[in-house]
Length: 181
Image 1 (cartoon, rainbow, N blue to C red):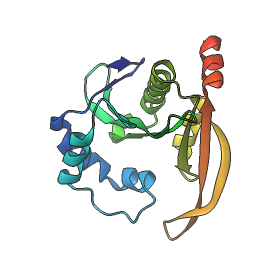
Image 2 (tube, helix red, strand yellow):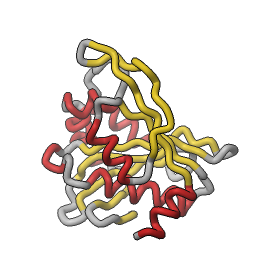
Image 3 (cartoon, rainbow, N blue to C red):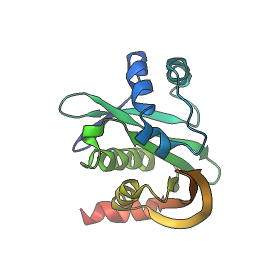
């Protein structure tokens, strides 16, 4: 387990599946996670995802829990790892509505980034975020991510087209942030 100030990252358990499936299907969560047509995520989908996780490979997924209560809050991880060129894609979601906007996602992302830069040889982490997801963009900037580009009108949501931002952070930028603290 990897611990921050508010959150703990741990391995997923099969007992998490029903709650994950419920939270991911919340409209406010689902619409910010995937560019696909919003279609219900099934319990079987989540059970297969949890079963597919291994300690080896190019995907590291963690359950996020509240450090004080142990309540499952959401998930995060790194995938699309390119070991040769030293980069990977990170993602996160907080599904418990009462925990949104209270720093739990920022704390979990900091723990994830620290884990990746301390335990792998990756030099860069990147992510994509929908431009209307202002809370997530603000959180990513707090973690040191910078906007690297804009995919214009990449997403059709809420009856119109929206931009998608590409953000990234380099190992050296993360190290400089840690030195300031």
